[in-house]
Image 1 (tube, rainbow, N blue to C red):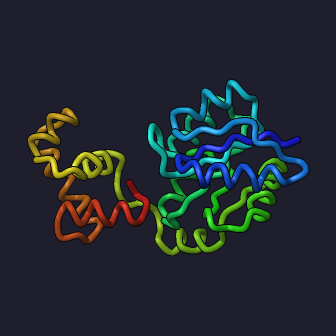
Image 2 (cartoon, rainbow, N blue to C red):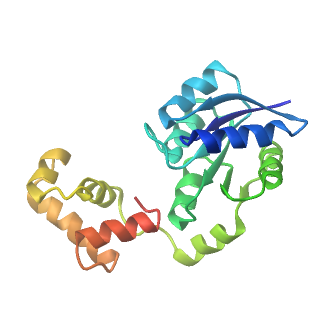
Length: 201
């Protein structure tokens, strides 16, 4: 029996997924959580073979939870599910140790097949997202540029960003300027929007 952990913050979606996967003769949902920071404790409390993680969750994102799970319990296979077909998410998910990356509106049979394939050692990636990720190319932002853009998302001033990130105001300006330039944006707000849409933050 394949033991599954479901991590999804929307209870109706989570329960529907659990019900559909529970119909598979070789699968059992042994744990369900609504937050990314509950994934690792649940996987430790209920030994699982495969974790299905939504990307957008409170506590930790699905990608952050995947990285933690991959590091702490490397035998657990990871399937990342998303509503948002953002190419940058795919790259981030694969780098975090995910074995599969699928959109949520895929048929339940396709999801069950993906679970079986990752257990057999295969990687499963939604073909449309894979093509988009290849066309998009790599994330041009450095880790520090991403940090500064994330911190700037709520409209903080350069002085506030500098204090929050332990950087000088000049350094913050330089990071913002480079990010805006790389994303061909007109200002920091547009840079944040573009980076979010592409899944680069």
